[in-house]
Image 1: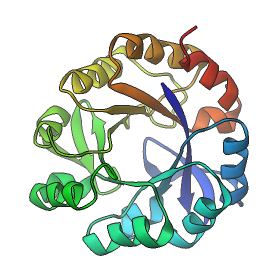
Image 2: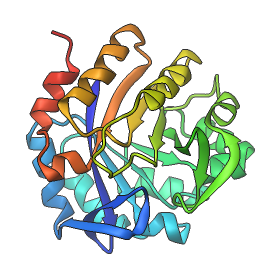
Image 3: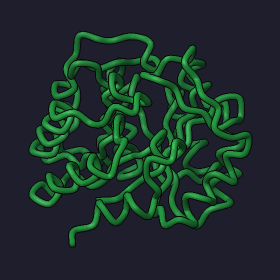
Length: 247
């Protein structure tokens, strides 16, 4: 199971939010490029980038610094936040050099368009499912819809999706661990035949181990995104990778 460090960008800085709340922001560094190098040097095989300004504005805002990050590391980077049209998707993939983009809001609001994007860019478009109580949240987590994560994901079975990235926003940035309900949701998505990456609430080595144990019997659970825990020092990238690797 791959460990994927997260870098959330706001105003060009490396930040973390609590439960996606822009009013609960902690700045962890003024140099996201150096942070990306640090995670790559510690063994990360992929880096997860979020354009928080973009998620709010509905278009990429931090693409300049994202381009610098992509150029600075030798591992693939995935990015979400503000990708609402083909021009933005193509810009991030072709011009900025992102390995794969993550689309959430438009997958809910314009399912036909999202399906077209997966086919135009096969295995380079991931579905970002941000959820609260298994219901989909949109617009940078500012709204909660009446659509369940499973109903949303079911529409896209059989398409050339890169992955489904599932974030429980009730847990995200709270340093409270990943709960059993979230793990059950992840496995249910994986059982649907989707490639799944966990995000939100991965706080301790025990959390990584819990996911890795389930991944051992459900290989469609392929990764875990880790954010605040790395910045707060409750685990290192190397420790997380070790815990995610079957002994």
